[in-house]
Length: 179
Image (cartoon, rainbow, N blue to C red; front, side):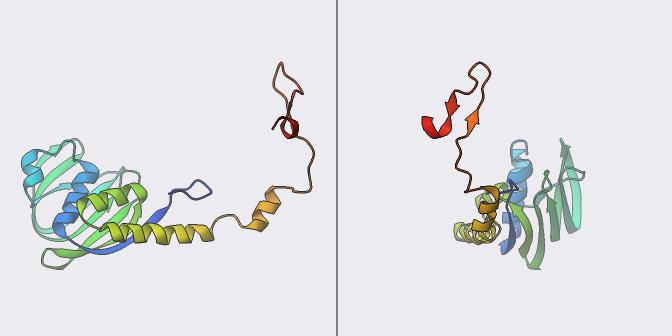
């Protein structure tokens, strides 16, 4: 999803989800290729990361660091109250807050790439993802070029032939005659 100006389109996320689906999202987005299998299966083990290029912070009543691999610390947690996530690029920022038991509310801003991981982890449904994309497309149409903008960029009164010169072929390419 891109704007006409080349900027990456972002979507606002606001959904309820389980703690486990947010954990799967974190793993998918940050460490799926190197997380030890035993940690992957353990629903109490979360990735945590500090730093300037992306971060994950787990707010919990009890947490113990198990192992650090690359830039990710794998921690065992109990009674998670909240999670803050910022992607490596900084384009995505998400927050999960416990609402009741193991369920919570995820809010924030996500890139198109993040939407795929949210969908894959079960945090959002396919229908919600499609709704986000549609809503975003409608917003982007409001920011696209209008007919007046195009008229300013294209001088429709100029109907002269355009000549492009290529070294060695000077003056031989006439777009009006050659097309």
